[in-house]
Length: 120
Image 1 (cartoon, rainbow, N blue to C red):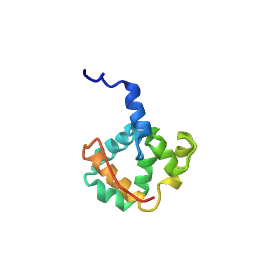
Image 2: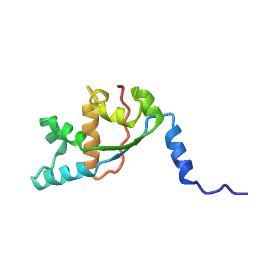
Image 3: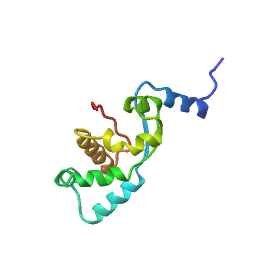
Image 4: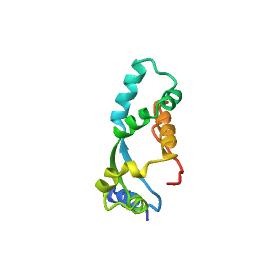
């Protein structure tokens, strides 16, 4: 007897019940910012972001959070996704800025995934 193929609901349950914080985000608008910077001749994103950290905030404001799991809501004390998104400024602070810069650098270089460990 073989197991039935995974159903979309099974995948959704795995996402929702994972014991770690998971985020599904849309970076399409960040890509547009990157395209503008490339057109302006920016090559070294790391130096460019660190020269003015407001650029990191600009990118952050363009990320659309599509979904998070229960663990994420619990971790950040959020009632629901809207509550979390409305309070991202309090969630991402201090060393998270540099972690986010690392994520942006990975995306800039063409990597589609980013994993990090931070204390918040």
